Image 1 (tube, rainbow, N blue to C red):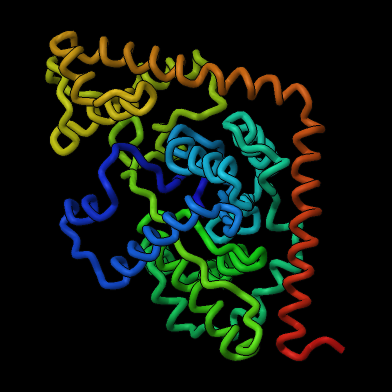
Image 2 (image 1 turned 90 degrees about the vertical axis):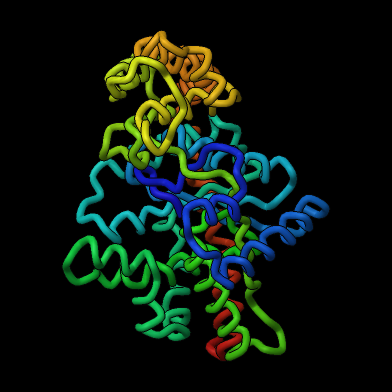
Length: 376
């Protein structure tokens, strides 16, 4: 699940394995196994998309931005259009794993659906639903929690990093966040999950829970598939200032922003004192972030753009980025504006998705209870 403010966003065309090595990290056996499984699954999916069910989603912590579009939304549209059964969860309950407020959550949810649909997600083909409206899915937490240990939960990288960053005790919801994600994936029996490298531990936890449930309660007639991660081969998209793209940094181009708002944001983005424009992510992260953004929306090589601008300086670079981004987003904005004229229809999309998700979740929960001998 991605966060609407801090998503695992991507750019460039380097493959995941090469990117991992370039970062100076050893490729673990588990990563190599996941990569192999991802490649094999992708090949099968291309041949028989109708055999696959995908679960993906976002936390409604803010507006969706350009990183979401390139990092996940476009691939969702591709999967949908290939014929994969596509499910998108708006994980509203998971907002409170690390936040103590739900202010603006309703507005965020509606804006997410607007952006999904403007980007090409078709509610007739893709089920869009919210966590909080599907109680049977959340009820899977109880049997699933019995299948994992406290130590396994505490070893999860997301849990560990949050504990180290916060410096205080974790909430029960955050500690069990990986199990909640397993419920998201398994309630609809998803067998593929798009994921970045940093999300692999969540997928492995889901695979473990599915395997343990089947072995313990349903070895003759397995209830759950062991889902495979489909690894993205595109690296992280930086924010306009070279840092990670995040709403809290004010460095993200929101999909719903106007042309004027986008222009203002890009104009105030920092660069450096060197006049000549060059693409050097290590030594010139801020200039390179602008070039990366321009490259994404134009389909051009950032180095080529840098060479073209040359000694014209940061002002010329920013103007190029402003023009390129606004031209790229113009069709999205136009579709979004048209959709926003009928917000009742947007709410109907959510209500219909919730109805469909409830039917699936209730059926799965019945199978779980039957496997556990709890149908009386």
